[in-house]
Length: 227
Image (cartoon, rainbow, N blue to C red; front, side, top):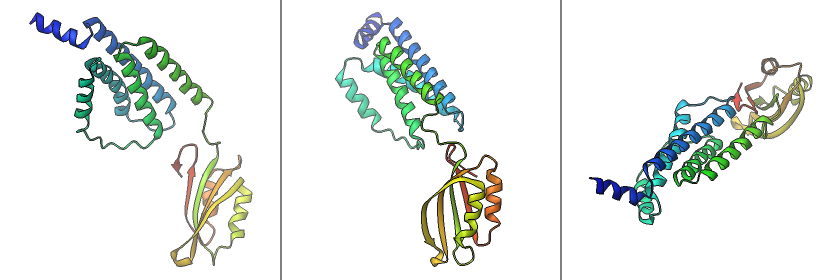
């Protein structure tokens, strides 16, 4: 039994202390990555299962890297094993994909025992993520919305809703116009910004009160939520 144990340790090139240290570091890095995701995702709903997945993914990948070691045969064997697995969970946000790869990279660096890359690399990237979140990089200005509505061209002339636009909006830009319902209606799309003195409900109410206007949809650009 001792011979078998010693053989397996030699085969994997990792001792008990190395295994415990690598997995612990991978776990801690996974927790930090999940925490950064939660902090920077505070404006949207977050699935607890995704946070747990980031932590476990980092730890499991570290274990996989130790199993592979320097063996090319084991690496190809792992690829063959994973090729029969089908992942059907759709990732809707590109940002989630980045965090998945981030957890993978953290687990790989911890698994091979390169603590310098693991700690400094993950720490620096986490710092960059928090900086981008702090300065709101790429976030749309507040009170900016995507507006879509359908209008009966015969009963609702353009001047009527443009009057509402001028009173309640600080700016508006037409994005598209297309004909629908056999040419009786047109669907208008605008990029609009509300005045500080107006709000979404007032704007929608006044626009809905106009005859011939239907299907009003107002989407907040900074949240991606329909109002």
